[in-house]
Length: 189
Image 1 (cartoon, rainbow, N blue to C red):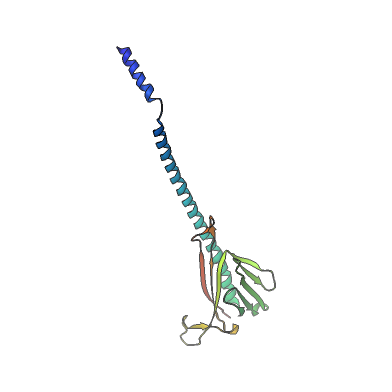
Image 2: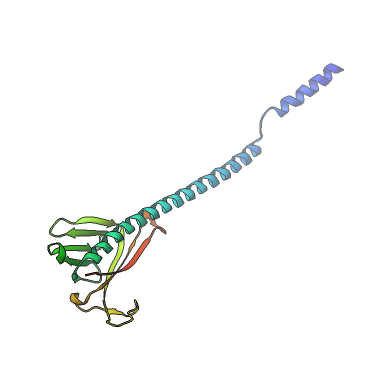
């Protein structure tokens, strides 16, 4: 009797140990694919976010360096000799031997700085837009920042407002990696 119970028990074990049925295998593979797809989706999303944050930091650092250099040059200039609203501005510094400094953007995503008759140096890349505005101060006792008007000739220019926008593509698409810089700088001289 004990022998027949042993055979029955071992027979049940062997049926249970045979493996999974086809339906169980398909359900397990489907669940595994769903988990794998979710993992790939989350990984790609995190990768895009990290690249976006890195691009934004790079663009912001480059823009701030360019703005520091440009505002230093504008403050130290004695005059704006030529200037257009989009594309170029030439500063004259009579105190250092009548040297000129030219900032130019030709629409090719690069802003260059030319010191005197030297070769242009690239100061900003990935630039989508650059504009300059020129203002003169209205004489008065209580001069406010709002008391400025547009300058019509280079000799009247005392304030320069500069604005630009830079962006980069992430995985072939322009995302929220824009860095916008705007400043109004006063000529000291």
